[in-house]
Length: 136
Image (cartoon, rainbow, N blue to C red; front, side, top):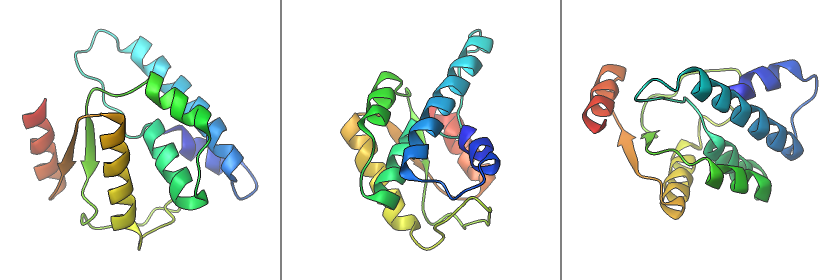
């Protein structure tokens, strides 16, 4: 998750322009991981360029079209989307504990528009892992 590294290293509140830098770093990180693990049948990522696009729309009301272009060139085969009702856990980089349903709906809309197959994960961590296993 490149954004964590980026956001902890800058000494100013991030701006919309930083999201393109985060997207480029995330994509490079993913490409390096894919190269190192190309022998594996399945590769999982905890985040994606879709997260950056959705966050930009939610926080700033727009997104950089370069992020969309990079996203479309690197679409995942399947997306697991956590239900918004899973209990929120504090993290210093999480900004919106009260807007989770709106974000969830925005993710679903974007996934549908991009044509990315997705499954909504619900329940405990163990239950979510079982759901993932069933789908792959």
